[in-house]
Length: 527
Image (tube, rainbow, N blue to C red; front, side, top):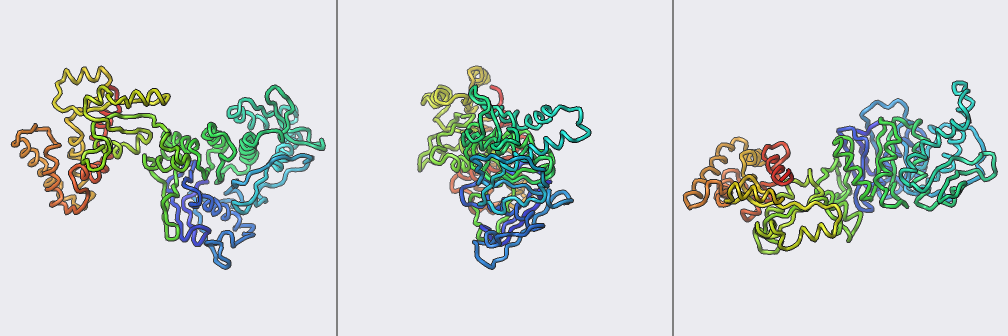
């Protein structure tokens, strides 16, 4: 089951929110600061199922601002037809606490479809006791199933236990799940092995161990009933060691049927990173809904956010606060340019352009201006060496302009690990014919493409007449920009040559362009 459209009107935090998912992602990640409405969306999805059968026990909770008498409206559409509304949604709240339980005894399993579950995201979600009873009941039912008459009872129990024990062992290698204690015992519960101790009781586990076990067990026990459903989990990372957040998300997804869609509200950088890895492997499998920066007191249409550098920066700030600036990128690219100081037109020019162009494909790359070409080649400021010393695994790349270097000079530089642009400087990439055509399209002047290209040819000719090289696009750029402004009617876009190229032209370069792949290969390809 996959959500296509969710529309919430006068609902909790939202005046009018519409969520659109044109594709069918298996994982939907809700991100953003506290209080931006992530849990409210999960409340909306959960309440859709409740409204079909049980109704809402607390309508005021779901109304806009909790105002009595305000009727909230909810529309949820799916990509597939709904055959049984009871099977469409399964929700876990963030209030998951099962400190201790016991003495459950033996009872027949009941229909999960007739259990409404927690009605609100603030409700306590203690399902461990029910999961124990269901695991035991299913084991007994299988033992009495004529089709499994020849299967030993222990094998049946071990099969069910194994569905939880294997992922638990991968996440917490020092903890082994041994299964339920005899349900006829007065203190029947789950038993584990830990630190050489067998028969370790559930109540003695740490809060993080209980949290991981709870999510894995509940998913394994409920997955057959909700095999084609929307699974909503609010903050699955609670109480769990940050080092396994991403793997916990992956293990839960692996337990679910491929037909299921999981919605997760999270602040965890680990879960965000794991989701991004999944998205890189299969672009349509993950959608990120970013709740930051929206005014939900008015109408908002939310679609999947592009996972670029700006997105990751905001997510890291949410996850780490003041520590976000200490999170190291996977690649650091040292390039030519002045440091970022006020009043310098070309401050970080190359770095800023490259950052804009590659932020979607390489969100984990940082571009650093370190000075002139000699500063980059020799790493005179020790930027690269310092980063490599302080941060394990980071890759430092050095990129310089071709300028007037000879073929032999370029070969020597490349042998020493320095990447040299195939064109004279970055302006040549920015003023490529594909880029000029894109500028005409985005300004609503598709008929001016020939004129704009001719304006660049004229600017280059005039530059040559002033004694500059035929490929010196940097010298020709100011004259071309003046002509482009007049022809295309551009009134803003940047008050200087550098600002115009950085803010108006650089964002036009996309991965559909041949010039994009030329620049990509020059910066990130093999030296």
